[in-house]
Length: 117
Length: 106
Image (tube, rainbow over all chains, first blue to last red; front, side, top):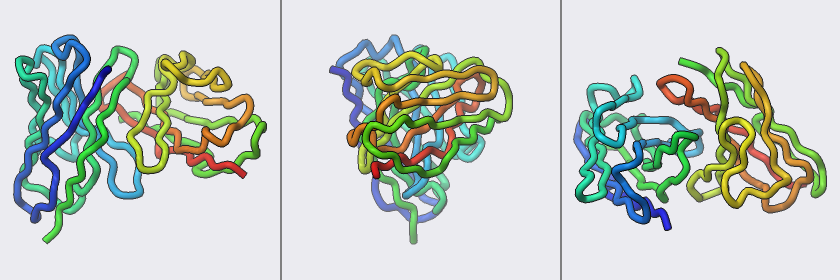
């Protein structure tokens, strides 16, 4: 069974940093690209960042470029999102999602990030 | 960036009613994906490559479209179909989502 379990969320002050992690299991992690997505309270889905299976390709949404860094450790089956210079508008539920060639086919349960003073 | 516009934003349907949700793209895309999100849960992969049902999706669901106009149809509304449905394009970066259609049961 495919499982994606996010961790690392919490309440943080504006301008501070936070690191999210996603532990993958139930599939061959090195065969899939991965994504971070987010959903602000009561809002829709927003793509944040993507990383290819071999780390060769990395993409970011303009809203986080230069502040967030996506990475993966294929030996540990983990996906990370290092977030710096956090803003109130980064407050959201953050999901990791597996990238199938046909879409994002599995999503974690999400981890909440709240940015507030 | 390709903008996806979903309509209606909210709708209610009676059990057994046929439902059609629309997703329009600002530029032509090759295909869209659809996700179902029930309140308080993660999105679920629902329809891919415009018209293919993901595993476990009831056959009363179907998808169609091309170019800039796509739709998700439920042939006969069921109470378990109450959810928000999002379309997504993955043709080019950044991947973008529509703002969703919230579907409720009457």
